[in-house]
Length: 443
Image 1 (tube, one colour):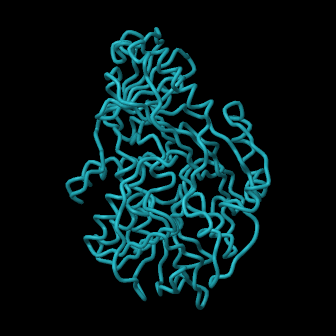
Image 2 (spheres, one colour):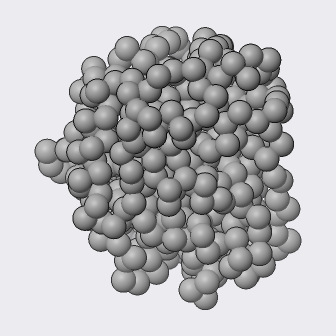
Image 3 (tube, helix red, strand yellow):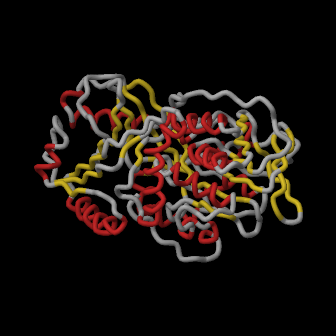
């Protein structure tokens, strides 16, 4: 069953030409649309399904600096600033609350890793407190475990996935952006070696600049134009509980579950690190690049082998013509099945940890396809071989919180403005030029 989502109305008139076309109306694409319209550019935001209907509405909703890879810290610092501003700026409820986040553990290795991270993050001005056993227990009242310690990040928070991308898209429309859903972009029009437009199922839109923020579909789209983009897709599971008398007031991470309390007493829950792989042609093609990450995390990954992904979805074989139905129209909204074992494990862990939640019941569960890079750092970058194209993808299961920063950086690159942060760590070329990729840090 799909995750909850706010629906958005399309714009009225389909344009012949705009300054920038954005492919994909998830959090990264919608945030880019908002930032570009603020710059005074004419924008078309095109979505093959519905705004935010894929991974942008299926995640935890955390907006965190804590435990991020150092390469992402400048961007998430800017993103958190934007999260704090966007509600008033757009006039839309995006659900952002600077609630703080709490991590609790019985593992000495966890605490040692968090201490190392804290020493690094202090250079960026990040506020984070290592918790003693007594402090961790005091900050998780009602929990049954005698924690060894934990970490608290008071400046971090959460937003509401069902509201965030739709709210930004609606706000961008009010500033003049055009939004069209159920409108797949089949490919790029190219003239004199650079982008000159996009071919959609409704016809051609002329433009000299395109941001491709198509999530799990980005690598397939790029491959159609001879652009090699190593992306691996992992299916994650999250779920929502029925309302219950509140026992956990702040987003909480434990080894058994991670949760975000809702205002109505329900929780959004997942189990960190768990996922399944259902590789198709793309997964086989990039298996070597992803093997080190798979090897380090295979105990939490379930591999499902079958033929369907080779013929349907973002990992499928084959090409397509721009004047005929494309793979994007054949799968308007990716809606992979939730993993029942993960749901049960999360429910059991919450009930066992908090006796007050013994009656906790499932309301809804869903799966989501997460686009990942070999080094777990996104690509937010121009592409030298095709001027006019900006990629915004590969957010590797931690893109929602960084979304407003990612949107601003992509907008800066598309508009040829000075980038809000140094884009070097996010450059596309690192994945294809033989660069030695850094192994993923804390995520």
